[in-house]
Image (tube, rainbow, N blue to C red; front, top):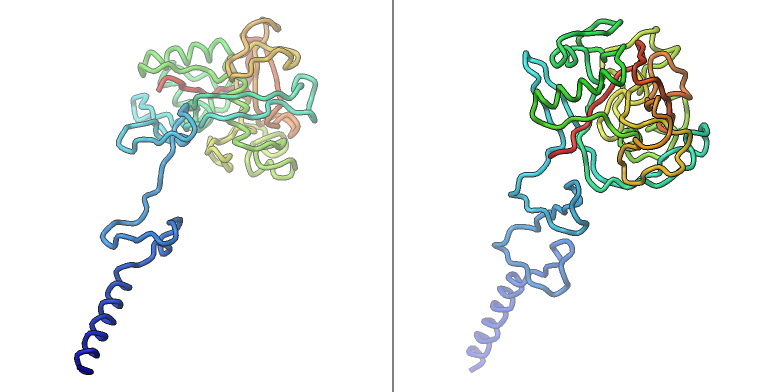
Length: 304
């Protein structure tokens, strides 16, 4: 009888050990509720990709990983071995302008871009312009340097012919799109901070350029992966020039009504400009038929 009892007790002990081994608490799995049993055959937790990673999607919605979506980077074939690289800029809200800057940079106002867009990773190069337009008007000749000596009118012709060539609708950026892309989430005077001392790591500007343009992409990019936003050539935008931001659109669209219809907006520094004219918020303007060897452009693509 004693031996039989010991056998029963031993059996219970073995059973308890087995159950303990099977009932591994899901506390071993990050984020699981205490006391839940983890299935040893089930793979670990999957990362959830939300639609916030997808331009224009509603916050909190779950993105279907099997559905094709916009890629972080796009390469456009222009023929003859020439390509154009574009970076996907996510939607978002930012403060446009600067209280520290010139009168035209005020008032600082919130702009919300509800849909993402692609923008050139680099300024339009001379070989890209040549591939589309059949000519190169630049003073500082090199296929990999930014095209310059181009007017706003010529840049509009370029995006029209680029659209026809590729079957996609390219445009010049709106002023708001340009500043949003340049800031790349920053709220400082430059994409990297407020100090002019760091500008040479990101831009070619007066005193640091050798009085000429340089090959695109030689300096550091901003957090969006865009190069030369603070300086190499200044870049034409779609907008008409206005003396301030009073009444400016808050949706990121180009401001083409009112203002001075005889002038168009130019953004960003250039090889010939002082650091204060290379800031994220600086606004410049010129006659749409005017140009110089410090004017170029960058393209955007919104239809994807």
